[in-house]
Image 1 (cartoon, one colour):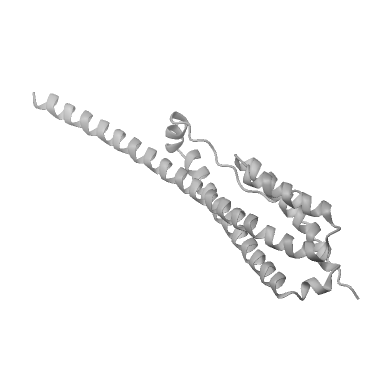
Image 2: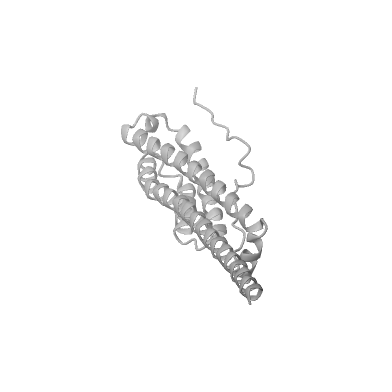
Length: 189
C-alpha cells in the first residue's frame, strides 16, 4: 500500500511539474508576443507623428516651390499608403515611399535658400528630425524585442508550446533597399 501511495504521489508531482512548466512556457510566449506588438505599435505611433508633420512642411514649401507638384503628389500618396497600411509589410513599403518622397523634397528645399531661412520651416524640420530619431529608436527597440521573442519560440522546450499554439516568428523591421547609400546634398554657391 505504501509503495502504491508513493508511486501515486510521484506521478502526481511529475504531472504537476509538467503542467506548471507548460503553463509557464505558454504565459512567457504570450508576454513576449505582446512585447512585440507593443514595440511595433511604437513604430506606428512615430510614423503617424511624422505623417501629421508632413502637411505642415509641404504647405510651407509649396509657398516657395508651387511648381514642384510631382513631389507633393508623391508625399500625399505615401501618407495615404501609410495611413491605410494593414500589415507590417504594407507599413514598411509605405515608409519606404515616404522616405523617397522626403528625399526628393529635400532636393527642392536646397534650391530655395529663402525657404531655409523661414523660422516656421526651420521649426518644422527640427520636429521632423526629432521624429525621424524616434522612429529609428522605435525600430531598434522593436527589432530587439522581436529577436528575444524569436529566440524564445525556437528554444527547447518552449518551441513545442510555440508550435502547439501557433506562435509565429516576428518579422524584423529592415532598412529599405538602397538606404545604405547616403543622399547627396549640394548647397548653392
